[in-house]
Each structure stands twice: as C-alpha cells, then as structure tokens.
Amino acid sequence: MDKLLTTLLFTSILFYTTYAQNLDCSSFSFSNNQIFATCMPLPVLNSVLHWTYYPKNHTVDIAYRHGGVTDSDWVAWGLNIDGKMMVGTQCLVAYRDSSGEIHAYTSPVSSYATLLTEGALSFNVPRIEAEYSNNEFIIFATLQLPAGRTSFNQVWQNGAVVAGNILAAHAQSGDNLKSFGSVDFANGL
Image (cartoon, rainbow, N blue to C red; front, top):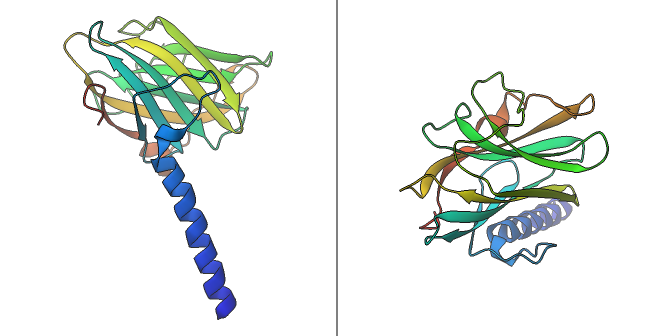
C-alpha cells in the first residue's frame, strides 16, 4: 500500500510539474533569442502559440511550438478566417524534407482531402521559417492580419511524412479532432 501511495504521489507531482511548465509558457527561451509579448498553451497536441501584435501596421509575429513529435512528422498551425474547423484554414506548415532540411511554407486548405501543398494564403505572410530540436518543431512567422480583425479561429495539427516529401493525413481520432479554438491577438485570449 505504501509503495502504491508513493508511486501515485510521485506521478502526481511529475504530472503537475510538467503541466505547470506548459502553463508558464512565457519562460520559454527560443534559440534565436526572440521574445514574445503573449503566449497561450493550446489544449491538445502538446502545442503552444506565442505572439506579439503590432497594432500600428496590423501584423503579428508568431512562434508556434509543437512538441512530442519526431523529425519524420509534419506540423501545421493556421487561422480560419471564415470557419471554425480545417476547411478554409490558412496554414503554416513545417517538416524535415528528404534532403534533411527543415521546410516551412504556407498552404491554404480548401477541402478535407488536402495534401497541404504549398500556396499563397488569403493574407500576406512576409516571413516564415522553422526549426526542429528535442522532439519539437517551432514555426516562426510574421502575419499581415486581415483588415479590421484581431480575433480568429485557429487550427493546429500534426501527421507523418511518407515517401520523401509527401505529407500523410493526420489521425482521424482523439486529440487530432479536437485541435481547434480561437485566438485574439490584441486581447491575448
């Protein structure tokens, strides 16, 4: 009984410590020394969104962190301007390509049968880059937000890279079907 109680107590402390570290996302240090004004732990898929909003030119610098993945996976984060789920999302995508380089690009999602092919978004993305380290992809980007809005629906996802540079569909169950929410870049919500 004592051994079981000790194990449960240790597991609870470990879980709480990990959970608390994810909640305190503001203490994360980026390898490029970039600092963001706001961060939001996302509720599923071990993801965190960091950002700084610039009201004068209506842009936002973001860092999307997606942990618990291998370098054989792809990750994506995006804004859905008019909807809530995947279709219509304007994505930022990153993966390690067949030459070993981290490839970051934009991809508009127009159907559930998307292959996340590279393409222009409905808003300007003047900068996008990504890195991979310690089982975590980080996508850095600057977004020129659509006029008159700071609040959007967001979607994030991950899946496997197969056959070189082909991205497989994400899992169709569990947390992969719960990875959406909202973000307000001006209010930090």
